[in-house]
Length: 201
Image 1: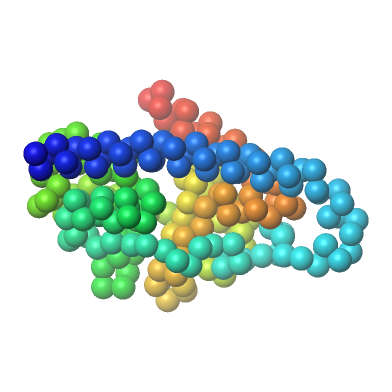
Image 2: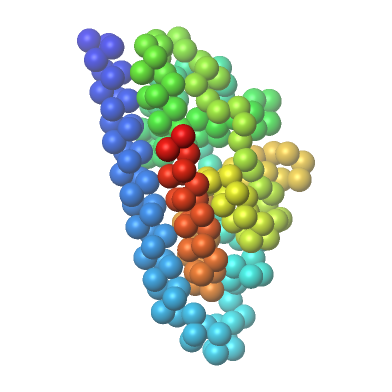
């Protein structure tokens, strides 16, 4: 019965993952559409031009600070429960105050459940990705977007210059800046093409 309960939890996580990815893409596209419609008026309205936009905002102005994270020795079951409770599909992995990896709901299913690991005893470090692409809170958003495009990822943990985790930023966060619409669309296109090419390999 316990195994069935875990399986149901991971299936639900995977379904939620697919739902979140679809909603994220929809949010980005809606934001880009709105940004395109408003771009001309923003350029010609001096009052609006003084508002923050993608050209003069650092990552700290767009990121989410209420970041959930887990530890490498936390069992997969508890990490899955944390994701389900918080309604997220991505958790940075922190050890001794330092980012050491990241784990997604897909990692829990593909690297854990599919391989028959016992989620009650398997640590997160066994299924996480130890290589995580990051950005700094005081970097311009253009640089963070470039990292996303080059690395084909839609979210980045954000670090302070001292190396502490201070937030997470996603492509959808950048799409909220109307003046950034054209560049975000280019980044999204690059990510999508890269992921399609990887799927063919």
